[in-house]
Image (spheres, rainbow, N blue to C red):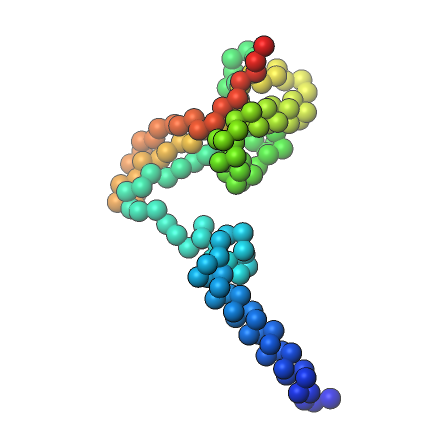
Length: 146
């Protein structure tokens, strides 16, 4: 068969039109969660030329007082997972206890964590260039009680 039937053409036009409508609606009213029909704003927006740049990290303090950067290797959690749920951790810092449990599971010989916190290092920017200064902000923290 060399040509499409009328029904085949109708179906293809309808599917194409539906895709175009979803893309238009996603662009006008969508959120990142609507991807691939939403705008995926993390790649379509940028901070101002003098806005500080955030660098989020997860860190723990063990029972000996040593500060440890918590990474995928020692906790099983990627930075993106923490950033993606950042507001939930801010709203309910006790969720960070799960991070301490994950760290203990991954590093059985290490001293247990007494504190887990999410820290944002704000790199200072002027005229779209780093100025070599930064400051840290703890946005959520959990400490062992008892």
